[in-house]
Image (cartoon, rainbow, N blue to C red; front, side, top):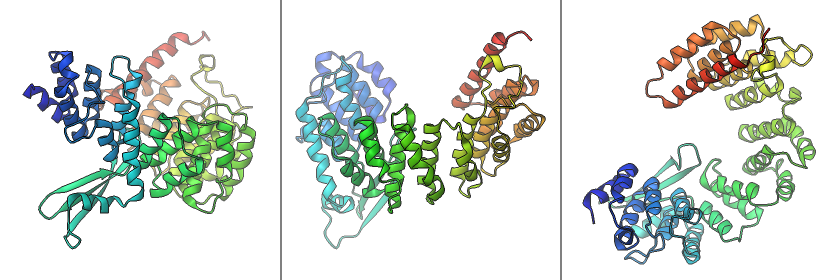
Length: 440
């Protein structure tokens, strides 16, 4: 085996791996050497490299020397994202398809973890004696850059040996059941999400995904609406999030959802559940009547103020429509109480709240001296997103200071690719809008 290729795989260098693989014959990649490379990438947890190897023709069904296969190994160690990459082989015709028996083996492996204590099982795997001291480390880690997270548990013996696992086995079981066409009952999916009761975790998110994407939406809504006022706060959080996720497309139960959510806006005391309720209510109503949201603009938790600031923008006009570029306020449509709330939120002590409020005002049809003064003042905001939204808002109002501020932000972006791209697209949008503006 090429030592340079193995080094790139172990280092997680997907680009070098891809380049070096081009010199390896297809029959070699499909055989023992390819399997050894896949094992090295899998054990190291390099999902990108695993994808590169599979794309090159490495066989994910090939059993390793210890009798384990890649899918079962990933399932055993709770590596949900890596396992899903292995499962994607069926979606890419250039990859070798994964056999169903490999999926079933992985499901059996993951299910074994559902009945054990992870730290105790890791201690057993280390072979630690009952009275032998070990250190148990727990760390929350992101599974992807913007996706769910997991908890990694590592048990370390005094001599330095350790065993570790990510506690995502319930998510893996849920995903594999769905793949095999045997999804669990909603109550079981709820129980899996609540085992660790960690919103945003793989277990939580996968149960949500199966409920909202893999089942009849009306049936799921009828199940969830009974739980949004449940005595258990974790159950309320989960149910409110299900109702929220169901709101992203038009539903026949929209009116019923509003009826269920409106009293929860007044009664929900938990900030996490309330955040989901506000989001769902705003989606189902289109924020056309923000009356029920306005009281929460003064909520003590910044997460709620951020949510309200983000949702109130839908109650205002939109500058993205070229025909409204003359900046004539629609006095009959604009609610002064919404504008007043957003102005207050744009000076909130929480940076993301200010940014959300400034975004709503920047994109709105509201063009008053007070709003322009506010946008100008926020060009010096401590929060980068807030500064950016203030600059865009002024530029949309044909204020030259907005364009100058955008150029300064772009020039100072440095290695921040995300910020540079945002400035670039904002400037392109403004240039396009200038050519579309109707003559006055």
